[in-house]
Image (cartoon, rainbow, N blue to C red):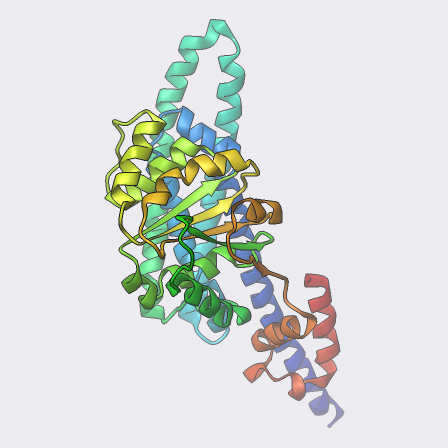
Length: 365
C-alpha cells in the first residue's frame, strides 16, 4: 500500500518534468530565433550582403520566413504536449533554425576572411575569385533554408497553429489600431510616428504585425510597407527598400538618393500610407529628418510605426506617446508557466510541485 501511494507522486513528478522540459525547449527555440534576428540585423551581416554582390532580397526573405514561424511558436509550444504532430513540427523546425544559425556563422567567418585578405595587395585577385564562388554557394544555401522555412509556414493551417501572441498583446494592439485609424488634428503636414519600445525578444515586432495585418488597417490605408532596418541606418537602402515595397519593383537602376526620394514622394503623394520601420537603432535626428522627407507628401492620416530597443531612438522619431513593452510580472510569468506545466493550467492538483515550479519561474526571469 505505501508503494501504491507513492506511485501517483512519482508519476506526477515525471509528468511535471516532461512539461517543464517542453516549456524550456520551446523557450530555448524562441531565444535562438531572437538571436538570429539580431544577427541578421547586425552591421557585419548587412555590410557583407551589400558589399559582396549577394541578392540582398534573400536577406529580407530569410527574415520574413523566420518571422512567419516565430509568430506561431507560442501556440505550438502550448500544443506540443498533447499533439505529437506539433511536437514533430517543432523538432524539425529546431533543426532548420540550427542550420540557419550555422549559415550565419559561415557568413560571419567569410566576411572576416575577406576583410583580412583584402588588406593584402598581393592576394587581391584571389579574394575576388574566392568571393565570387562563395557568393554563389551562400546564396544557394540561403534559398534552401528559406524554402524549408516556408514549408513549415505552410503547415501552420494544417496543424491549427495561430499567432496567439502574448497575454498583453490582445489589449495593446487595439490602442495602436485606434491610433492608426484616427484622423490627425492640426494643419501641419507632419506624419504621426508611433514608437514601440522594448528589450530584444519582448514582442515588439509581433505587436506591430498584429496592427499591420488587421483587416481594418488594410481597408484604411491605400499603401502599406514593412521595412526591416537593422543596426546600420543606411538612408539610401532604407529608402530603396520602401520604394521597392510600394511599387513592387527593385528600382535597381537608381543609384542616387535624391532620385530615389523624388520617386518615393511621387508614389506616396496624396495617398494615405502606413510604413513600419522594424528594429531601428538610429540616434541621429538629421538622418531621420532626411529619411522622412518624401513622407510629407502623403495624405492626412498617414502613419509610421517604429520598433526599437532604445527609448532615445523613439524620442527622436515619435509624435505620439511611446508604447513600452515591459517584462511579464511575477503573476503573469507563473500563469504562463502553469499553463504549460499543469493539466488545464491548474497547479492545485499538484500542490507539492507548485513551489518547485515557482522557483523555476524565478530563475527563468
